[in-house]
Image (cartoon, rainbow, N blue to C red; front, side, top):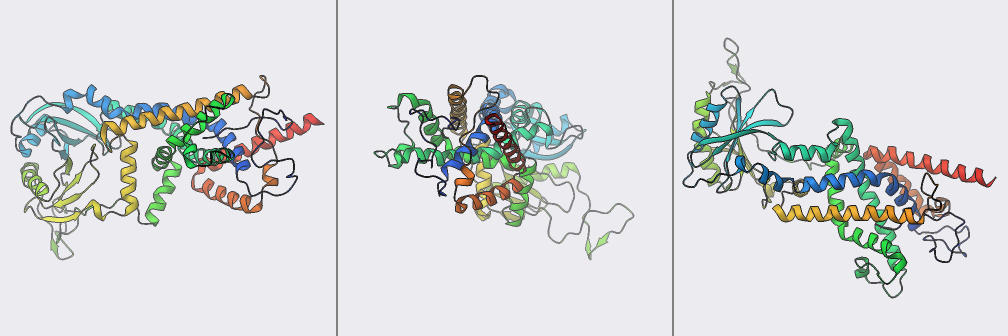
Length: 486
């Protein structure tokens, strides 16, 4: 988000601006300016981590428009050309079960809009985690039109699943996830320290102290146009970049585990309805066992045909209770469980209401309105939907695509500026900003900053490890420079 000054310490050319906070009169006086430290950290993190962020931005651009691509590529599964009155949901599910009697029925997602297909979901032991087999049914004719593996709560088809995994791990499995976690963990740090530098630079322009100049590149400075575009574009994309960084970390391996623990400690986790029927005992006992537990009789097993027939009643109850948008109905696997109905993450959907319904009576046994979710759980849900390009449809995806293009531009401009201003064309590593800023900075800045770095490094382990690497590189470069002077 700002320029990294790569001049060596002996560069005193009049065309080169001074390092923020340096002045001939400052001597060894401790300064309260944050800009020198921000410059050094922004430089090292930007130079070494930016390649990973660049890859994440490029793969993220594909991931952003994946829902639209999926809609075109898999139209034969997702859309139908027939019209008319929808057949009973039980008839649609029965037709799907007839095509896959070898699998266990687990859920059904009725067609959310006119022209959409109904998804009947099965558990297939041959599939991986979070994968299910979906039979797609024409709701007007109750005839299956095809089947496919779907992934996750979003029901992604194979192409979108592949693009998602490519963005997350470059299709390299668990080791590959380290790249995206490193990018997400450092992105917000680089962006915020870059903002500090850009604000510092804009404030030095006496005639341009208003906040609007943070958003406007100064094109009057011909020699610094790349710098000004680098800073201005960085400010344009900053809010979305911070959101993507935060939501990206929730999916990561090590930082994600800490985020989950923090949410649990603060009661920010996503709530869920209880699918257990009232006044029922634990799991059904096998024949010949103890048929009584806690004084309550265990209900007799319910066969599949009865469960399918109950779907019509459950679906009607759900719509009468206000769940009229796209939802998924979980089919209970045991007699003491109710049907669970939960709204899906669909474009233009900002709530996730859920119900539990007794299939035999149509009684609502539990309900959970999205309005009753904790605030942070709501924000997390919206943030993840936005990250996936599902919060408000095509406009969401185009905005993400534009942000990724802006992020790529900022990174390329940053490297181009370093390349044009590098001290020697034979340098294997970039020349960092002037040394000694930590010694010359006030403890009122350095002590809280070091404490924050330790805390962040513990909570986001890849930041901690890479920060130690940066420090080792910095020390090595300092020792090498000192040896050259001897």
